Length: 284
Image (cartoon, rainbow, N blue to C red):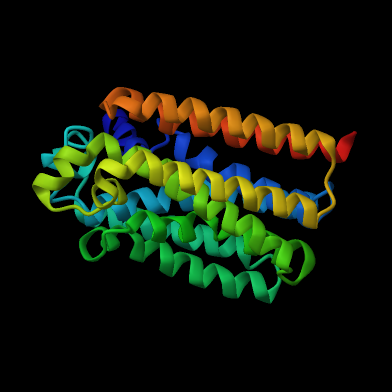
């Protein structure tokens, strides 16, 4: 029983919280901006729990879609659906249970949030299959990974103003950048098994494209802050974000697996510092 629970935890990536954190920081920033620094407690709790659940849902459906390919990729060959620790039927049942749990949470909010959540779950299910039909699945993931932003504004305000879309655009660009770093780790294996990615598409210009997306993310984060009339402390967070981006460029310079993965993980700190700076800007 203990081994089975451990396998379920690995399927949901509870042991690897990086994805949850990368989802959480922009969601919390959206709630702060929409509420002008003081989100509703109920809304805040619903979104934090929802982020955890939906990240788990995304991992499950991703492993289901890739179950016949993961055995051929060094980083994923020991995942529970590949090793047989969890059956496909069990994984799908868990996905449905978690999806219903997430949907029950949004039913506590307004109609617009419920409508946006339906789009969100559809996008989540679609994403893993994008790796078969497009060379730019990271760009689709950017939409999935940013969908909590309009939802947060809708929950807090009942509408989605222009300011929200600046933050959405910033997170979309940032997601494409860091998930391309992630894809660089698996690039050689992905080429062999036929999985598509921006790391493969960009080829020898991968670092330059990542830099362009980082720069675009920076510009949109600045515009989001200006739209919300944020001040000096948020500006310091922006400067720190630039520092993290430069460090990540240094890490991926040699295109080696371990440093590229380290660069991807470093984005958690970039997101945390930007969120902390926004929080402090309101509190101060």
